[in-house]
Length: 340
Image 1 (cartoon, one colour):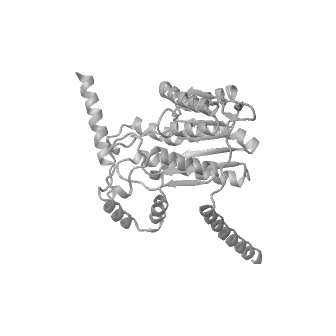
Image 2 (cartoon, rainbow, N blue to C red):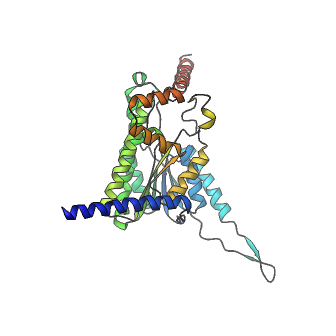
Image 3 (cartoon, rainbow, N blue to C red):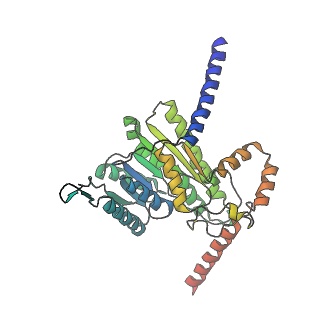
């Protein structure tokens, strides 16, 4: 009994110390680590946040491995990355004693593109094998690819529900199983899960999307605990949970108009810069904006009816309905055109 009591007090001290160190990071920003020359796989790199992540890692001279189901958009991202590499490696002339001295640029990193449907397990494993063979072992994995069906539950075809779950959640299992073994062997790596605030708290009309993001977060947290239990302190995990991001994915989504100026959709560039800061300082989780932390905490302690009242006040209870209506109208228009 004495041993248990002693251990309990040690745990309390460690918890208090964790609060102190976390608070210190708010005051003194931790130094960002270097990812120069490290191999970084980004899924869903053909657009949206994936493209912005690629550009940010390119500016830090990482070796980019871009995965996307769309070859053309993926190549467009690769071209942007090559342009960034070119700008970084443009020789700079410095004034010397006589004339100028030309700086020799460092070795230029490369970018590789692969067409991969992360919704298909075989495609993930075969593409991962190509990456290991053609590029090398992966240091950083950004699980970013995501889809949304845009249908109310009872109107959503089963195939779209399955597609949402597979791409947004199951794919994380497969990409991680493909690259984690070598990370464990080397005790080095970083896995990033790009989830959503809708994986922390939900809203009406996007049941499949919320379920997939809740699943991705559950997977991420369980894997984080497994790595801690195996004492692999060289492998880091970062969970990214942004509020609504203005990428067009949820075009039409609206909260109460009086509240919207205080909680507008996030600019994608801001969202990715915040996520990059978290990744490069090995931060376990980043919610953007910070109010998401508070909402998630309140959801954990308030009665459900109280949460419903708050949702209705904010207009968050039916915020997805305009988006769903637009998607339905667009689909009906496409069907009408195809029928002509």
